[in-house]
Image 1 (tube, rainbow, N blue to C red):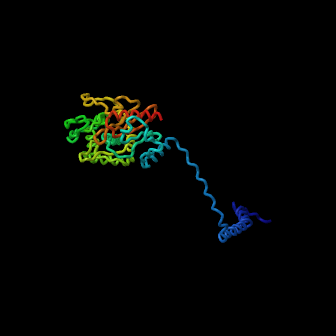
Image 2 (spheres, helix red, strand yellow):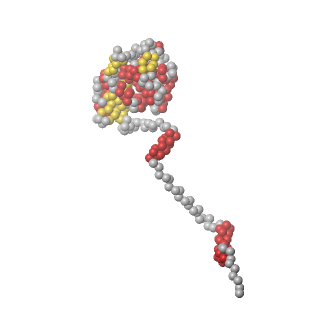
Image 3 (spheres, helix red, strand yellow):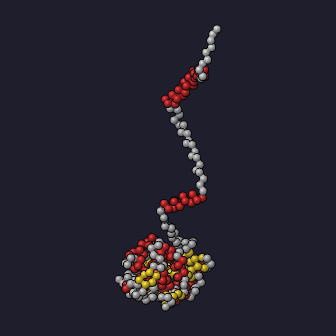
Length: 349
């Protein structure tokens, strides 16, 4: 009688696994070796492209606050770019509109800043003396300094001896006086005060007007004013025979940048205001504003013997903006009559 011995647990299973491996595993391994060897030595088909990489998993959804933060970081890291300025299209511009006093105009232009079309032009790129229209650049640099936080309308500015000595149109600043910057800007925009323009330029130039005048020329170049040269901040001349020069076309480029400042336009369209706590009345030097020609809301007049009577005029009628500039008239009445007729003609087109 034979004895049966119980095998330890798992021994029978182990034998079965070995048997299975011998029967099936070895042939499979042999076939695998053949296939691998064929790919290694034969190289397969070289024209067969590599399999495409798997698609990346979709980005997790983010809430609006996270997206806004990412956008803010992007904007912060990106360098700030100045807005592109599209120049004006002279095609189709009228050279002779047959208007009264048109022949008396030395240079001029009338544009639609939205369509960028020149409606009328006469020697528009000729550089000529521009007198107090120079103050448009003085005001622009002042507004940009305020916007940058370097100064404010409340910044006190003490009158200097040099400002006191400036003549022409003025508010008779006295070295014993100190005014907020905003009050000085008001006298420049409304009264065309040369002494105030000099004082502001001197202050923003760190005590040196030449520094400010250089900034005026740098800004003109940045704006694309190709026929412009500044020698002073007010337009009277630098005392050495030099007078500020620009073209009607260039002054349009300056004007359209300046009208973006509401404070400037508010002052430029003000007919009367007070200075020195009401002790002095300021009358707008722009008769087109003072006499309320329809829609005229600025911008700056000028006169010297060299420039004749000139003006850069802004007008808004029925939601449409036109900007013009004319120079070289013998009298202010001729200039103003022509501007009124030119605006009427422009809005009829």
